[in-house]
Length: 321
Length: 287
Image (tube, rainbow over the protein chains, first blue to last red):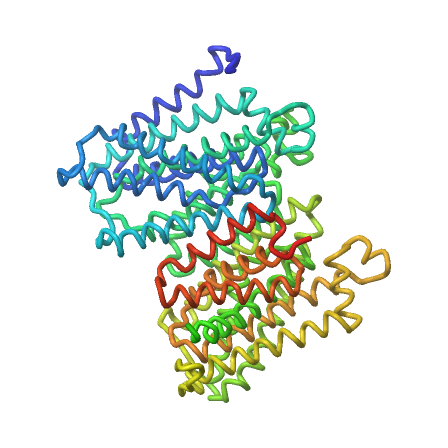
């Protein structure tokens, strides 16, 4: 299934980047480390989103459900094991368990919703994020009678490495899958689902599995990010930002290639941080206006702009990047 | 039990009004305006502005001014943003995705402009809030009046769509966008008209809401967008009767849950929605 040919020389830049990222905590101040962590988080979320929605063009706006569930399950387990109610497990194991649960949940959701296409699918997935949020709130208020979850404190380096490792895992898994038959099948569903079915691609199997894998990776990011907080409550864990921004970032970068979400996530998350600091009150207005302008004037994203006639990429013959 | 019949119908009438605006916009233009709830909120704040902050007008006079201003805003938004998106998009999938993103941008802009102008505190223009007893349960008079106004406006819209030439052109654009152009309908005009009409309906709804509730904030929009989307999906896109029925169904569900378990009302609405979509992907009344 994974018959990928890579020349060793092609791996050099990736390895260099990984080494630099791994050394970052020793090079950067705490503030810049937190910004790097944020960029990595959004990058991994955008890539996970693109893996399913970008390839199949089933626009999911439900990422927040899986991000929040991953985050909340991990947080809850850590809280309860710290209080002695559950067996203490190593952090990575807790996160992986949360991922597994999310994978199963996403399989069930995929089975019911992936028959629906287009805008209805977007609305339904958005609804799933709302349901997840409300259901957790209801559970806390009515069943356990608590509000929010308290976590043990982790230092900045641990948080950074947790996010970095999860992001690398996301990159590795999506790259391998995208280049396999699996990725081809997803892409073909995006081009024309009828044709795909016609030539013998089991479209529903790939769609449901693709959705579940994407959801699992999103919850992996949620779980690994949870230790950043000392206290979480559902409204922040399930914030619609986690549904919308990965889609917006991918769109900004360009949906046609795997570099799109990377580019979009880096640009938008840095821009967002800058605006938040520089224009605290008007930040969301500027972001909204930018979003409209991107749709109007850069509908194919940054990559589309770079690929246009007479640009650097085209002249160097890299238009198919 | 009897109070659910009245209470649910009151909510249902308002929901139908809100959903009808979005249904008109989406049905005719295929643009999913998720900032629809923000237009409702804008309508509420305009009425608040003219009745409580300046001029001190009767809320129903403010309602008229607010409706006019918001529908002009809707028209400008359509011309400046959505018309361009229609022109640059090659497929319907592209159009839907792009307009979705652009209208999410609008949500941020409208919400925060209102927050910066009016603040984030709860507002309201309480009017006609004495209680009357119907079927053994007390209701605010303004709720009943709002429900009646909503139903009347829905009926007026029905007659416009059904019998006037403009209304027929709109329905033609819903059924057969290409055919409508072939028989000489100016599709650009129809799009602009349906969009501002949608904004108009949401402004009326918003102005009625601000007379009923005193906890209006700049952030009420998304909940009404959710409800409107649920109503449309239940009733089927471009389906007038389906939209009214869906509105009342959601109204009853919401009212019943208000009494029983308010926290779960959106959850139940969405679960109903998922079940309906899985069984009938085109909505309860879809063909």
